[in-house]
Image 1: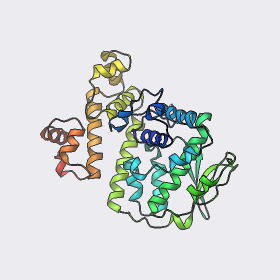
Image 2 (image 1 turned 135 degrees about the vertical axis):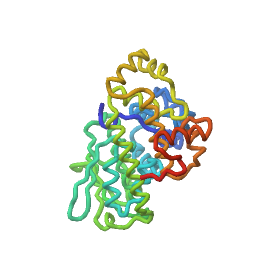
Image 3 (image 1 turned 30 degrees about the vertical axis):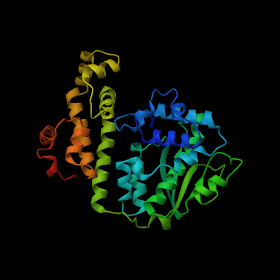
Image 4 (image 1 turned 30 degrees about the horizontal axis):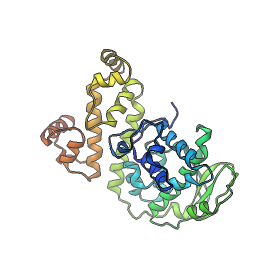
Length: 335
């Protein structure tokens, strides 16, 4: 499995199909070959695989050609809110420098396909995007999308749409560079040694308008937990957990998941036991962590959180939460 070959929420697929519709490409065409129905993208329980997202990109490039700056256009449509908890963690950071560090630490919670790293320089930071693992037919699109998204997110964090951040591309300049200059506010450097965004020191050290120490601590803790879960749950346990995360409101039973994995429920139980867990423990873990995440956002009522996690009534959710944490959800304070 490559670094980016992970299940994703449907938000990115919605951005891409929306871009296609703006250019006259119906959603059904963008989703061709993905086995995703248009209505599924509006369901928070839907999981989109990395390969399905790549197929959407290929469909767009086939329908519209490679002359349009589609990667740039796509990147400018990703907002902090598109990335959920990760976006909240960045926006509540004290400075852009801190946000960059947090963003890179938990970048696997985003929709990025490139590997990202930071190189400290006297005049700022160079954010380098390594595209060597990407399929060649979508590499340019993904590099342009992720550099455009990086610049766009930095401007959102600063609440300054005119903030100038340098951009370098390894590939050659297109016939028309005006769309690039409009998006970035500067003419990118093409045929460069690396794909990179150059963030000057005066922007890095600028205080962010939505900085909040408590929110920053809570959201980073959530990011840390989610990333730890993703890394820790390898093997068959990780596969089962991904299927449960995709459908928290109507979790399938073990027989259904076993059938999806082309094995018997007995074999699945045996393999989970060998990895030190069980189907019930994974289901509880998923609900517990999602409950913590939703409570930390303070955007939903206890009743709504319970419904989203598949509990028919609030008392049932409260009972389960007390079993996990020893206290009712109304008394829970995220750490």
